[in-house]
Picture (cartoon, rainbow, N blue to C red):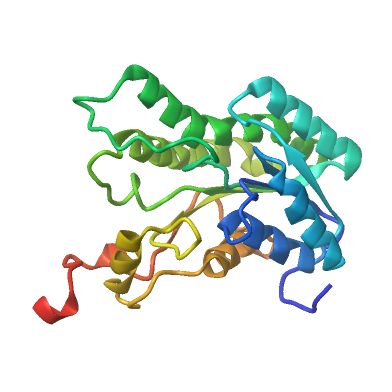
Length: 266
């Protein structure tokens, strides 16, 4: 375990949506593990086992789990398995959502959108966070300690795009749920916060998104580790008096009115 301002020694940390080797979830899991946490990572495909092996090769206690977190019975089973295998979870990083391997995103306008598409977006981007939180929370209440960090987005709570009404509604809904829950469990030494990433340079970033990142005040997209660092701090014991907050990690993009090429304005 590295020497650090924060540490997660002997804490069981659950990170969802950690299947991608370049994603925010896996990067967060690595940092939590390097800081002493016992890591449970969850994804929808068996690539999660490779991620778990990579953590173990780093000397981290880790185990991977496959589950469709939109299926509440699977959520119950996987959270119980984590508790049986590693111990009661005290840290939960709800990172799953946005995209799923083998499932295409639907950028249809509300006028053309099907009810099924709307429901799928809400299920994937909001209900997953609720489902995993609902099943993990009793362990935290019993311990009288917990840290929940929900990965939302600037899309929805702060800004939006055409064709992203379902995604925007879901990500904004995460903030409302987080604030209510923060009030409900604050007296049990459990904090609930959200991180709102902007343009992130992961393997799934499109060419257009990369260009948008170049027009932020910092003139680049974030790397996954920069978002993970914010998540890890909010998940730490040291963030003990921060709850119900929404931390924007977007390189200042949302504070600027003009977001085009600098040669045309600033």
